[in-house]
Amino acid sequence: MDAPVSLLLVEDDLKAATLLVERFRSQGLEVAHAANGELGLAAAQATPFDVLVVDRMMPKLNGVDMVTQLRAGGIQTPVLFLSGLGEVEDRVEGFTAGGDDYLVKPYAFAELQARVMALAKRQASPPETILQLGDLTLDVVARRATRGGAELALNPREFTLLEYLLRQKNQTVTRTMLLENVWNYRADMQTNVVDVHISRLRAKLDKGFDTPLLHTLRGQGFVLKEATT
Image (cartoon, helix red, strand yellow):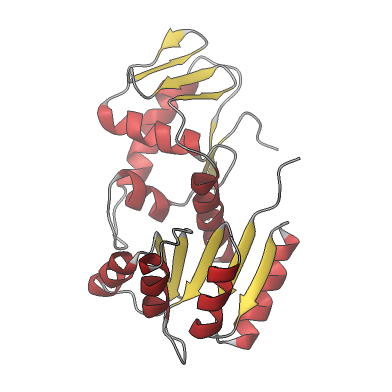
């Protein structure tokens, strides 16, 4: 059995922190809480967590300065910033400090959980070059995808999209996550580019097969998996 994901939540709002800790633990994660940046810095330096979820605006030491100090000390634990500051320059400052992801408040817990699990999965092992799900195989080096032995004619964007979905297989990914990781957009955008490409990819991936692999989760995003239950 895989070890549960270990998470450090650095959040000064006790009510919000208590709710998040309870919800993460209900999903099987091991969670520790630090009430300010100084305590968060000390905890992250003392314990090897899988992921850090850090509120940006905190007393004593803000989240950006906390992560800057962690990175300067050689600690590379993935960091997801939570913040009410959502302008492009705010996000850029977070990423420049060493953040790996940035989620603007208010947010849906399902998206926060999906982002945390994506960071934890990325941290767990080096990137594979042969990705598989059932009868679907993607060779990252050869840039070749097949299903049931038949080659899929994917354009470069569809290949990148499928690669990301395969690396997050069985996990929900949101439209925003796809925009950020496949299209490299760092701000929320009103665009249907994700839905258009998902539709095209699904047509190539699932057409002619009894078992669909690419599923839309209404109000949440998408998941690549063998079963719908």
